[in-house]
Structure formats: C-alpha cells, structure tokens
Length: 446
Image 1: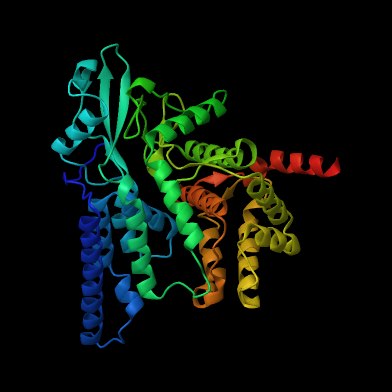
Image 2: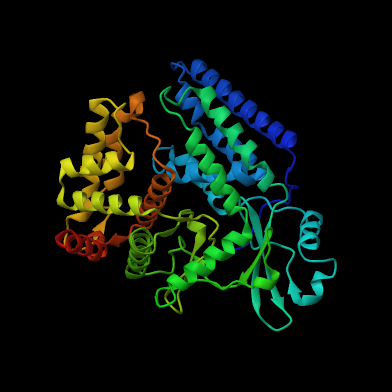
C-alpha cells in the first residue's frame, strides 16, 4: 500500500489541536449555512439534516481529521464504519479515506522520533530504510526496512503527541456532538468515554500491542488460513513497533478474485470473529478493512494492527452466544433476555423502541436460517434491518450505552458484516456458528 497524502506536521500541543477542532466546527457551520441558503434560492424548504449531510461537510470533516490524526481521526474512522449505508452515497469515496490513510508526518519529525526511541546512529542496524511510509493511519505510520541480517520488516512509528492528546481529543469531539443535541438527556457516557480513552491509550502503547500480537499469533499458530507477523523485540518500544513485513493485496481489491475466493475470505473472517468471541476471548476490535490483506498465491489472509485488541469477559461471551442461539431459533422472548443482559435494551426505553429493536433482530436472524450460504447484498438484509429500525431515529429513549466490551464486539461484528455486504460475499453463518451452539447445548445438559 502506498500513501499518497501530503506530508503535514502532526499537531501535538493541546491548544493547537483545540484550534483545529474550532476550525472544523466553523467549516461545518459554514457549509450548513451555504447549503440552507442554496435550498432557499432553489425554492426548497431549508433542511438542517440535508445541509449537515452535504458533500462539502464530508470533505471538510475528512480532510481536517486526516490532518489531525490521533484519537480525533480514530473516532472519525469508527463513524465512517458505523455509518454503513445510512449516509449519502457521495460520502462513501470521501469517508473511505479515513479508513485507508492519513497524512504522513514530515521527515524531520520522523527522524526525531526514531532517534528518541533508538539512537542517533540507529541507521547502522539497517541495510535499507524507506523514509516514504507505505501506510499512514490514525495513530502512526508504517515504513519498510531491511535489517543487515536480511530480515524484511514493517516499522510502525507513532505520531508525536498522539498519546498525550487522547483525553482532550475525545472531550472535544463529545463537546461538538453535545452541541448538536443528538444525545438523549438520560444517556450518561461518562463511564463509556473513560473506557474509550483507556482503550485508545492502550492502542498508543506499542509494547502492549506487541504483547497482543504475540498472543494472537499463538492463538492462530495452527490455523492454515491466517498469517500473523512476528515481533522484533529489540527494536520495539512504546513509540515504535518493529514486526515482520508480509506482502498482500487489500482485502477489498476483488478485481482479480473469483466469487469463491471472496466467499472464502469473508467466511474465514466471520469464523475468526466467532473464535475470538467464544473461544479465545481476545478480540481485535477494529474492523477497519485496511487491517486485512490477502495473498492469492498462498490463499491466506494476513492480519495486521493489533493495537485495538481487547480481552472479552466471560459474561459478554456467554450472553452473546445466548443471543446467537435465540436468533437462530427466532425466539423473541430469549432475544429480549439476552439483549437486556448485554445492556442493549434497558428499562428507560419505550415499549415501541424495545419492540422495534426486537423486530430488527428478528430480521437479522434470517441469515441464520438457511442450510446453505446466505448473500447479504442479494437478500438486502442490511437495508431491510435499516427499514425496520427507522422508528428508532425519532425515539430519544432508544439510545443505549452498553458496557465497553459489548460496544466493541458490536463494532467488530458489524464491520465483518459490512465487509461481506460490500464484497457481495455468500457466507454460511449457520454452519460457522454450529460448533459453539453444540458446546452450549452440551454444557446445559451437564
């Protein structure tokens, strides 16, 4: 992957980053005014929602978050994933940039980071080091390098100031969201935001990511479908992660893939998600499509970026399996119990909101009924769920703030489903889930 972004110094000071947020808010407000004025002169009734969702705002938001990097861009990436097909089609190619690349930092800033983490003569260990990054994401950028012993490496270098700005970035984003009045008054996100800050700080600790990578590599050591890079411990620190460089094509580049290959890729990734949740209870919770590569010669999936790994509690694992079981049996009562236990419905919700959520879950359960593969795109499942869920948009009681485990699992499952939908894959959801339901049934009998 080649990064084509223009080099920009990473704003590292709190005041500098706050000023960037102020510029973003001003740009969005200006685009809304421009949009509503255009509607008036066209004889249309002004629509705040339509003006907020216009293409100018998509461009402004994407450019400015890509310039800022850090937690601000990470939150933008998560928004672009969660939006699915709800946003205008014109936003997709613009927001996709948030999922793929950031602006790389200048060489001088890079050299300062390398020297601070290694030494001034760091280059003597390498026979090759490319100063042009092969990827630049929200927390850091990646460079190709070759050690003098011949090992080919990917060197992930963290942007300066990212770790220190996480708290203020999230607080600033939430301030902007609160100004819109989009959050119901009864929703208290204090605990969730504290955990989100802690999670992002973990992602910004490359020593922690190295531990997760090693654990993940051990979990999949006997799985022939996946490749996980090894860590070079002597070159890894809090701000630099040195690991094996592995070739592969972007998972979304299906131009040279057969339908069977696309189906296999998405099936294995969904199987891996079940394995993470129900077996290992260690989940790579960031479903960014750029975290996956495919090797056509070995027919293996390369897994990248383990900063967002999360240990899943036994409670969350057990009740997600109970929810999957209830969905496969299409038992509404058991779905309600599992959703309540997971915190996805609660006593503050209106009866109408709970009924709508249950209808949406029943609609989603369609993919678990067939004895053969299920094609999400052909069956229009995501659009059908959205249509059923529309009343929730106007119902202020419908918002929930589940425990952080649950929020991350939801994000991962949603990301895998959106990937399968995007690629038009056919998956056998029922067969992939079957071993875990058999284990659950066996435990219940004992």
